[in-house]
Structures are given as structure tokens and as C-alpha cells.
Amino acid sequence: MKSSPVGFANSTPDLAIQSPTKLKRPGELLQLSSGSGLGLAIVRQIVEAHQGKVAAANHPDTGGAWMTIFLPIKQPDFL
Image (cartoon, rainbow, N blue to C red):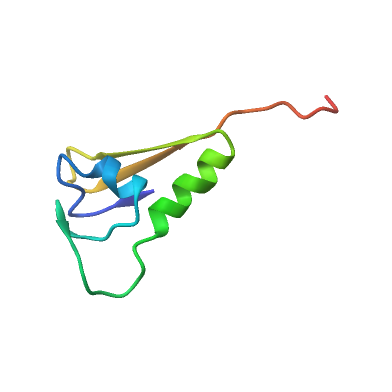
């Protein structure tokens, strides 16, 4: 998943996936707008329920944000 053009402030990528937050500009919390700000926190909970991880980082070239989801691979029991 990518977002552009703003991305996160250097100190906020992990905050965005740990708790329900909405960022107006890098590092600035948004008080009033549409949406609940729960999206990334919900994604993190679902991914972690499947023993995965979510990582957030700024994309240095475009200024947008990158969200990476890591999920374990398990072979089906019937193989």
C-alpha cells in the first residue's frame, strides 16, 4: 500500500499503525475530518492475529508512505 505525496514525519510511521490516529501533515494530528482514523490500527490487529507484522516507512524518493505487510507462509496439511 502506498500513500502520497505527504508521507509521515520521521517520528510517526510506527505511531500510525500502533494506535488510531489521523495525520493532517507529517507529525500533526488531525482533530476533525471525515473517516475514523482506525484503518491502519485495524489492519495491524488483523495481520498480527495471523502471526504477521506491519511496517511503516517513508518513501525517500516520492515523499509518500509505504506500508508493508509480512505474513507467514504455511503449507496446507493435505500436501
